[in-house]
Image (tube, rainbow, N blue to C red; front, side, top):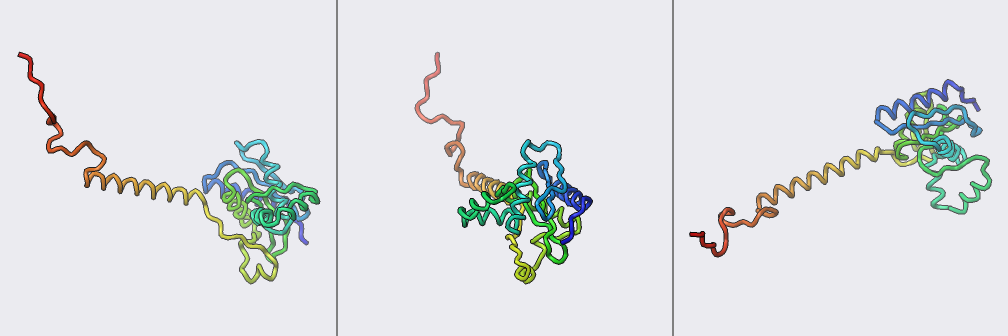
Length: 211
């Protein structure tokens, strides 16, 4: 098993931060662990909250604990909660069950470490972590084909999507529907004042003007 060098760990963090800047993410904290689960490098962007190291470390350690992303570890915990309770009791490190922890693999698929990212929604944490892995010349689980994954026993997650884009599409759809409704109301006369022949005319008996 090859060791993960410090310059490689720092390149992963730099790559994750570059992706976060490109995607306009919230400030990130990123930790890189070696294959034995020990910290190789950690950096925290300005504006991060207090416990971001612990969260990032827990995500990365969870990924190493079961040889899969921390997102998949979370799915395992939902399927077999008693199994995960036993894992937590046996573990000599923290297990933070949330997306953002990814395995670092070399070209052959061997695990050389893991990365944990936190600070934005978990999908963005994962996207930035994977970008950092690739920037340093390594491969994430998502970079292997289905055949390779079967041979190497790699658990590939469903494709990641930026949830903010779906939210933007939802807002645009709502605005479009609201605009269509306003146009329909104008055409049918709904939503305005009563459709009298002449809205300026008073309806009902007139008062007599004083003499």
